[in-house]
Length: 246
Image (tube, rainbow, N blue to C red; front, side, top):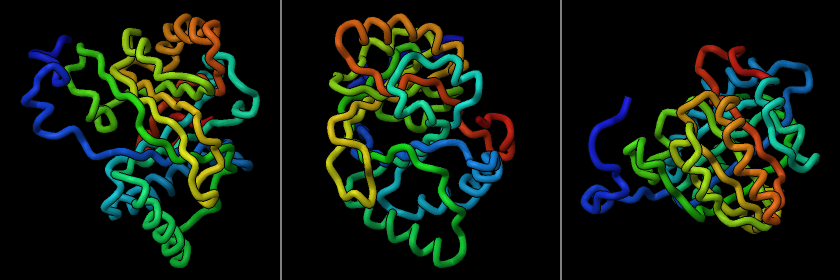
Protein backbone atom coordinates (compact mmCIF):
# COMPACT_ATOMS: atom_id res chain seq x y z
CA UNK A 1 0.00 0.00 0.00
CA UNK A 2 1.31 3.43 -0.95
CA UNK A 3 1.24 5.95 1.88
CA UNK A 4 -0.17 9.40 1.08
CA UNK A 5 1.57 12.72 0.74
CA UNK A 6 5.00 14.22 0.22
CA UNK A 7 8.07 12.60 1.82
CA UNK A 8 9.28 14.41 4.94
CA UNK A 9 12.75 14.99 3.52
CA UNK A 10 11.17 17.10 0.78
CA UNK A 11 9.15 19.32 3.14
CA UNK A 12 11.11 22.19 4.69
CA UNK A 13 8.55 22.82 7.43
CA UNK A 14 8.75 19.20 8.59
CA UNK A 15 12.54 19.31 8.72
CA UNK A 16 12.40 22.64 10.55
CA UNK A 17 10.46 20.94 13.34
CA UNK A 18 13.58 18.96 14.27
CA UNK A 19 16.35 16.91 12.71
CA UNK A 20 16.92 14.59 15.67
CA UNK A 21 19.79 14.81 18.12
CA UNK A 22 21.56 11.47 17.60
CA UNK A 23 25.24 11.90 16.74
CA UNK A 24 26.89 8.77 18.16
CA UNK A 25 26.29 5.00 18.03
CA UNK A 26 27.71 2.34 20.32
CA UNK A 27 27.76 -1.00 18.49
CA UNK A 28 28.53 -4.38 20.05
CA UNK A 29 28.98 -7.37 17.74
CA UNK A 30 29.14 -10.80 19.35
CA UNK A 31 29.19 -14.55 18.78
CA UNK A 32 26.38 -16.95 19.64
CA UNK A 33 26.12 -18.17 23.21
CA UNK A 34 28.84 -20.79 23.89
CA UNK A 35 26.26 -23.17 25.42
CA UNK A 36 23.44 -22.46 22.97
CA UNK A 37 21.48 -20.35 25.47
CA UNK A 38 20.91 -17.47 23.06
CA UNK A 39 17.17 -17.24 23.74
CA UNK A 40 17.78 -17.03 27.50
CA UNK A 41 20.31 -14.24 26.96
CA UNK A 42 17.96 -12.32 24.65
CA UNK A 43 15.18 -12.62 27.22
CA UNK A 44 17.36 -11.12 29.98
CA UNK A 45 18.79 -8.38 27.81
CA UNK A 46 15.44 -7.32 26.33
CA UNK A 47 13.44 -7.39 29.56
CA UNK A 48 16.07 -6.10 31.99
CA UNK A 49 19.31 -4.66 30.69
CA UNK A 50 18.21 -2.84 27.53
CA UNK A 51 15.25 -0.88 28.98
CA UNK A 52 17.41 0.33 31.89
CA UNK A 53 19.71 2.13 29.44
CA UNK A 54 16.84 4.44 28.52
CA UNK A 55 17.00 6.09 31.95
CA UNK A 56 20.12 7.81 30.56
CA UNK A 57 19.34 11.20 29.01
CA UNK A 58 21.92 10.58 26.30
CA UNK A 59 20.30 7.35 25.01
CA UNK A 60 17.71 8.11 22.32
CA UNK A 61 17.07 4.66 20.82
CA UNK A 62 18.28 1.07 20.81
CA UNK A 63 18.20 -1.84 18.40
CA UNK A 64 19.00 -5.52 18.94
CA UNK A 65 19.61 -7.79 15.93
CA UNK A 66 20.19 -11.52 15.59
CA UNK A 67 21.32 -13.78 12.75
CA UNK A 68 19.70 -17.12 11.91
CA UNK A 69 21.07 -19.99 9.80
CA UNK A 70 19.06 -18.60 6.86
CA UNK A 71 20.61 -15.18 7.43
CA UNK A 72 24.07 -16.71 7.47
CA UNK A 73 23.43 -18.51 4.17
CA UNK A 74 22.39 -15.19 2.60
CA UNK A 75 25.55 -13.28 3.59
CA UNK A 76 27.78 -11.79 0.93
CA UNK A 77 31.55 -12.44 1.02
CA UNK A 78 33.39 -10.59 3.78
CA UNK A 79 36.38 -10.88 6.10
CA UNK A 80 36.63 -14.15 8.05
CA UNK A 81 37.40 -12.18 11.23
CA UNK A 82 33.72 -11.21 11.30
CA UNK A 83 32.21 -14.55 10.26
CA UNK A 84 31.31 -15.47 13.83
CA UNK A 85 29.01 -12.47 14.40
CA UNK A 86 25.44 -13.55 15.19
CA UNK A 87 24.33 -10.80 17.59
CA UNK A 88 24.49 -7.02 17.12
CA UNK A 89 23.38 -4.49 19.74
CA UNK A 90 23.21 -0.77 18.97
CA UNK A 91 22.57 2.18 21.26
CA UNK A 92 21.96 5.59 19.72
CA UNK A 93 23.38 8.50 21.77
CA UNK A 94 23.05 12.26 21.58
CA UNK A 95 26.83 12.58 21.90
CA UNK A 96 29.92 10.74 23.11
CA UNK A 97 29.67 12.21 26.61
CA UNK A 98 26.67 9.94 27.21
CA UNK A 99 28.99 6.95 27.18
CA UNK A 100 30.33 7.89 30.62
CA UNK A 101 26.93 7.32 32.20
CA UNK A 102 26.58 4.17 30.11
CA UNK A 103 29.63 2.65 31.79
CA UNK A 104 28.56 3.83 35.24
CA UNK A 105 25.08 2.31 34.86
CA UNK A 106 26.55 -1.00 33.72
CA UNK A 107 28.66 -1.07 36.87
CA UNK A 108 25.66 -0.23 39.08
CA UNK A 109 23.51 -2.97 37.53
CA UNK A 110 26.32 -5.45 37.95
CA UNK A 111 26.58 -4.46 41.61
CA UNK A 112 22.90 -5.30 42.00
CA UNK A 113 23.43 -8.80 40.54
CA UNK A 114 21.50 -7.74 37.44
CA UNK A 115 24.01 -8.86 34.84
CA UNK A 116 24.58 -12.07 32.91
CA UNK A 117 27.97 -12.86 31.38
CA UNK A 118 28.27 -11.05 28.06
CA UNK A 119 28.07 -12.94 24.80
CA UNK A 120 31.60 -13.54 23.46
CA UNK A 121 32.54 -10.26 21.75
CA UNK A 122 33.90 -10.01 18.22
CA UNK A 123 34.17 -6.23 18.02
CA UNK A 124 32.80 -3.14 19.73
CA UNK A 125 32.87 0.31 18.26
CA UNK A 126 31.82 3.91 18.78
CA UNK A 127 30.61 5.48 15.56
CA UNK A 128 29.76 8.98 14.34
CA UNK A 129 27.03 9.58 11.77
CA UNK A 130 28.26 10.23 8.24
CA UNK A 131 25.12 9.96 6.09
CA UNK A 132 21.37 9.42 6.42
CA UNK A 133 18.84 8.93 3.63
CA UNK A 134 15.33 7.52 3.30
CA UNK A 135 13.55 6.09 0.28
CA UNK A 136 10.85 8.60 -0.73
CA UNK A 137 8.27 5.80 -0.89
CA UNK A 138 8.22 5.36 2.91
CA UNK A 139 7.41 9.07 3.48
CA UNK A 140 9.08 9.10 6.92
CA UNK A 141 12.32 11.07 6.94
CA UNK A 142 15.86 9.78 7.30
CA UNK A 143 16.21 11.39 10.73
CA UNK A 144 13.61 9.07 12.27
CA UNK A 145 14.73 5.75 10.79
CA UNK A 146 15.84 4.32 14.20
CA UNK A 147 12.16 4.45 15.24
CA UNK A 148 10.71 3.22 11.91
CA UNK A 149 9.31 -0.33 12.28
CA UNK A 150 11.56 -2.80 10.48
CA UNK A 151 11.24 -6.41 9.40
CA UNK A 152 15.01 -6.65 9.38
CA UNK A 153 18.29 -4.83 8.94
CA UNK A 154 21.08 -5.47 6.47
CA UNK A 155 24.46 -4.54 7.96
CA UNK A 156 27.37 -3.57 5.77
CA UNK A 157 30.75 -3.12 7.46
CA UNK A 158 33.45 -1.84 5.11
CA UNK A 159 36.98 -0.51 5.09
CA UNK A 160 38.06 2.31 2.81
CA UNK A 161 34.50 3.16 1.87
CA UNK A 162 32.12 6.03 1.38
CA UNK A 163 28.46 5.86 2.32
CA UNK A 164 26.65 3.45 -0.05
CA UNK A 165 23.83 5.82 -0.95
CA UNK A 166 22.84 3.62 -3.89
CA UNK A 167 21.43 0.99 -1.53
CA UNK A 168 18.35 3.13 -0.90
CA UNK A 169 17.22 2.36 -4.45
CA UNK A 170 17.00 -1.40 -3.77
CA UNK A 171 13.50 -2.80 -3.19
CA UNK A 172 12.88 -3.50 0.46
CA UNK A 173 15.33 -0.87 1.72
CA UNK A 174 13.43 1.92 3.48
CA UNK A 175 16.55 3.94 4.18
CA UNK A 176 20.14 3.86 5.41
CA UNK A 177 22.32 5.30 8.11
CA UNK A 178 26.07 5.17 7.51
CA UNK A 179 28.40 5.75 10.46
CA UNK A 180 32.19 5.84 10.84
CA UNK A 181 34.16 4.33 13.74
CA UNK A 182 35.99 6.73 16.06
CA UNK A 183 39.21 6.58 18.08
CA UNK A 184 37.93 6.28 21.67
CA UNK A 185 38.68 4.78 25.09
CA UNK A 186 39.59 1.09 24.74
CA UNK A 187 37.13 0.30 27.57
CA UNK A 188 34.41 1.07 25.05
CA UNK A 189 35.73 0.02 21.68
CA UNK A 190 38.08 -2.31 19.87
CA UNK A 191 37.12 -1.22 16.34
CA UNK A 192 39.87 0.70 14.52
CA UNK A 193 39.01 4.23 13.51
CA UNK A 194 37.75 4.73 9.96
CA UNK A 195 35.47 1.70 9.44
CA UNK A 196 32.15 2.45 7.73
CA UNK A 197 29.09 0.67 9.06
CA UNK A 198 25.82 1.01 7.15
CA UNK A 199 22.38 0.08 8.48
CA UNK A 200 19.88 -0.74 5.74
CA UNK A 201 16.47 -0.49 7.41
CA UNK A 202 14.20 -3.05 5.73
CA UNK A 203 10.45 -3.44 5.28
CA UNK A 204 10.92 -6.81 3.57
CA UNK A 205 12.21 -10.10 4.93
CA UNK A 206 15.98 -9.58 5.37
CA UNK A 207 16.89 -12.86 3.67
CA UNK A 208 14.89 -11.88 0.58
CA UNK A 209 16.27 -8.33 0.60
CA UNK A 210 19.80 -9.74 0.81
CA UNK A 211 19.35 -11.39 -2.59
CA UNK A 212 18.51 -8.05 -4.21
CA UNK A 213 21.40 -6.29 -2.50
CA UNK A 214 24.05 -8.71 -3.74
CA UNK A 215 24.60 -7.13 -7.21
CA UNK A 216 25.05 -3.67 -5.70
CA UNK A 217 27.48 -4.97 -3.10
CA UNK A 218 29.44 -6.86 -5.74
CA UNK A 219 29.75 -3.66 -7.77
CA UNK A 220 31.17 -1.89 -4.72
CA UNK A 221 33.69 -4.67 -4.18
CA UNK A 222 34.83 -4.50 -7.78
CA UNK A 223 35.24 -0.75 -7.36
CA UNK A 224 37.77 -1.36 -4.59
CA UNK A 225 35.66 -1.21 -1.44
CA UNK A 226 36.81 -3.81 1.11
CA UNK A 227 33.82 -5.67 2.63
CA UNK A 228 34.28 -6.87 6.21
CA UNK A 229 30.71 -8.00 6.93
CA UNK A 230 27.67 -7.96 4.63
CA UNK A 231 24.80 -9.70 6.37
CA UNK A 232 21.03 -9.67 6.97
CA UNK A 233 19.66 -9.73 10.53
CA UNK A 234 16.26 -10.00 12.19
CA UNK A 235 15.18 -7.76 15.08
CA UNK A 236 14.48 -9.53 18.36
CA UNK A 237 10.74 -10.16 18.83
CA UNK A 238 9.84 -9.63 22.51
CA UNK A 239 8.44 -12.74 24.23
CA UNK A 240 9.28 -14.87 21.19
CA UNK A 241 12.84 -15.49 22.30
CA UNK A 242 13.31 -18.63 20.20
CA UNK A 243 11.85 -17.17 17.00
CA UNK A 244 15.14 -15.81 15.63
CA UNK A 245 18.20 -17.45 17.17
CA UNK A 246 21.52 -18.53 15.66
